[in-house]
Length: 115
Image (cartoon, rainbow, N blue to C red; front, side, top):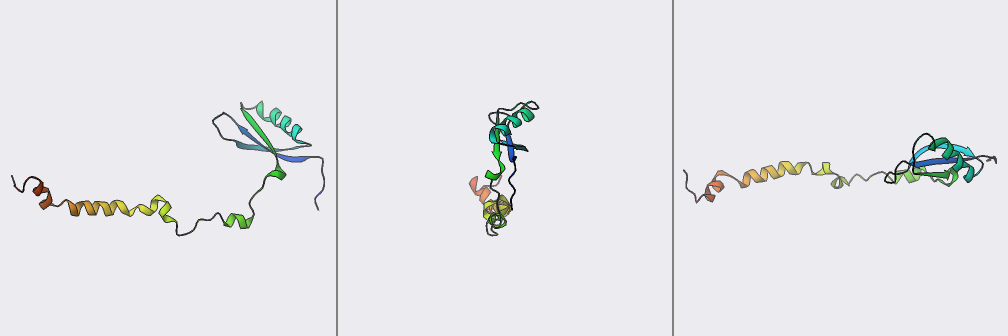
């Protein structure tokens, strides 16, 4: 059973510069959205310079449940998407170059004449 209370919980996000992304700062209790925004400005903006603040009611934030988190796990057959899956190529290429550029071939470039 959830009890009705006068205060609601809000999450506060801020942005320090126009190019920066929003970061979570803190949560606060307030009776409504307007009061929450006012409290966030009073408590946060006097400490640090910010260009924008978001105040979001916590009940409007959806977190993932356990079943949804399981869908985030990577499949085991996706190594080709990471660079570590291609580590063997340097060694393979070096071997290919060495086989290709043997002494006979290099001498054939000068017309086959040794000096």
